[in-house]
Length: 291
Image (tube, rainbow, N blue to C red; front, side, top):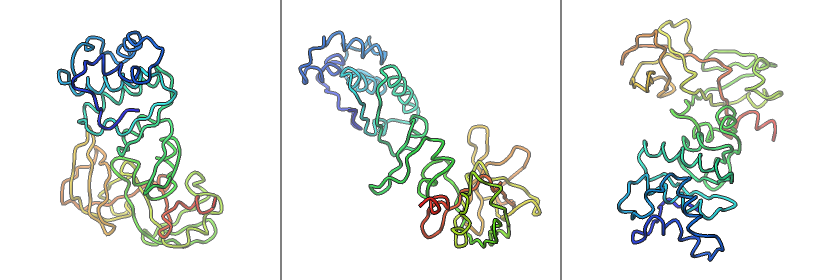
């Protein structure tokens, strides 16, 4: 197990810290050989005679990881091991942990509150809320097909936009009353489960991720009128926050639209990119049908 507090003994050298689990367990392994292999995996062979206080935070993390590797466990347990690191060091150690897992070929259970860590490191993710499992799936499954509003809001950065409305149903035709927009749900089999229309004839929440929002200054091409509140540069893109009757909505501005704070704009989205949740249960219509 690797703890949130790396818990290195300050009076022991790096070598003795790595070897300590072997001494406690009284294993038959050659401690020198095992420590050398673990240090090589973590690329800290030249630090074995130093003390924790003499090495950097990243090197301390590598030492703590080597201490778990040296035991050759059947399973790694990691309890928020990166929570105390700055963003740059987090990214570095995150790669190291993934490399270790591939080199030693052992499964790992990794606990984190950082959804970016979960999305970038995991083969499968368990999303928990208040002690209960909300959804289990691959990163792609959780991002593209969240079971409920909690999972949709937790996965994704920037967070998904939620827009409350009400629907009316006529066969396969669903009208979103607030938007005055009617769609044929049979055209979106990946979004709306077969026979899910009954569960849509009620108050719903439309979830749209910022990367699926489109801005326009042409009223005829837009669904929601809004005013630009804030523009933030994210790498080579502009993240735009607007005020609307639905509250704040975030989206990325295309390079061909000149937007300034205070501008009046309209936004729209492709219905194939929408996530729907029943307002009362906060679950996706597919879940209601499958249940």
